[in-house]
Image (cartoon, rainbow, N blue to C red; front, side, top):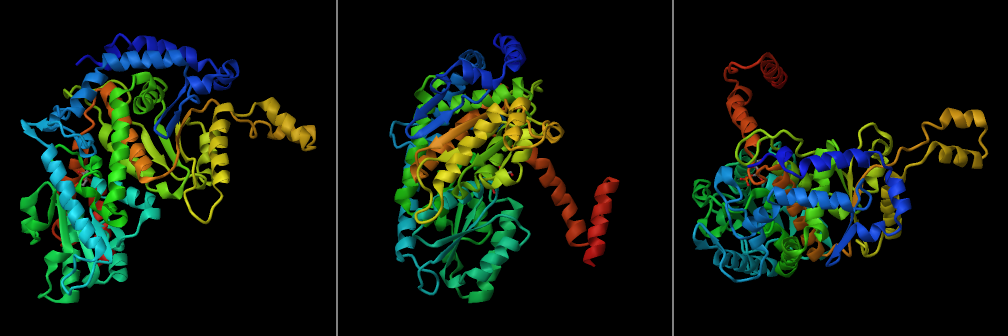
Length: 546
Ligand code: F6P
């Protein structure tokens, strides 16, 4: 694997970045009235405006060249066709197949995965319809009113995001989410639901994640305590996992298992049975619309030229800002509360996928990879951290996500929200010169001494990059498109950085150490031979708990 810095396209980009950093973003707009048309692209009701980055068409050409040299197209084709794109685990990554209605055979390790996908969707549909129309009943013959999704990471964040985003279509049982093992969410749920009418979805690809297993055990204990040992617990628990054997060890019914597969990564899995909570909330039809939206973005990613390709451009620009521009963070700001979970969902998707410092062959990488992903909804975030985005010393590229249509039926002021979104990206880009700040203050009648006192604090450097993703509406279909766009953006970054976006060895060490420390913290056993800080913290906890 040729290191990124040794690709022929690397040095031209380094030089180009130097030249570009001498130009002001504002002047690029002033010079070219057609900049928006040149540097924006639309597909099926999703528009990416990337003109407010410090780039020209030449930058895009250079980035596309580099991406090609890094084998982006071959890697992409391998992903879509079931190739081993996750070498450290010898796995394919076929989340795109989950939303592909086609029926031409798609083989992983010689066996066609299409029939399994179709069967699972059909089984899911059967269960979802029966639960939603009351045909599926609990142990006392009552219909299900509440569904509790127990899972963490990819088994939680995607469904949590989608259920909230699709809330206007929620006409099924109420859906609750429990991820953390601290007991808070679970206790809230226990206080709200009736065991006779509650269905728990235990979602875990591995079926070994300690938080999920602990919560599942507690839910089972609660259920038995409330309804007695004779109650048919199996009717109230559905497992969604790639590890059916372990389901038995939990005493659950293997008949009520929806499969996950090795060839779908946890953080790419909401399109599978992991999306059961979504389908239960809004129905199978809406769930399929979300899949169809994802598929539309897949086709676009696979077929559109790289310089007219939304996820490819998003990935290229991220590489531009991070690797060539030295930006170490990226803010995600969706301008609707219905996408409140998008920043945390993308934190896992992007940071767990690309937070790597070795390439796919295990060689150390010598260039910056994933930035810190964080964010909050607009306009709420404007009143929290935007001060730093506008005037802080750290330049943080922003992804603004806007919805053209209304997101609520009978309340709200969508125009105000949109005006804010557009104004923020404009302000970050153009800034305010000292002369403009002075002029503005003079206009307000301030005296010259006061103006000079304030002018520095009231000027804005500008030139701060952002993308705007504008969605025609926040339908299930467009939500599917949005999520798939970010999945592929992450893939494009990985292809250029040379990392494997489908493994996550980095989360293992902490898990192992937690297991080692648990007996000392929970059962008062001897503290293992650890560093002074770890020992001190454990000792303090034990003392305060006593
Ligand atoms: O945090 C690591 C991780 O393995 C994620 O990749 C995954 O989404 C999450 O834990 C949950 O895993 P599982 O679905 O196996 O319980």
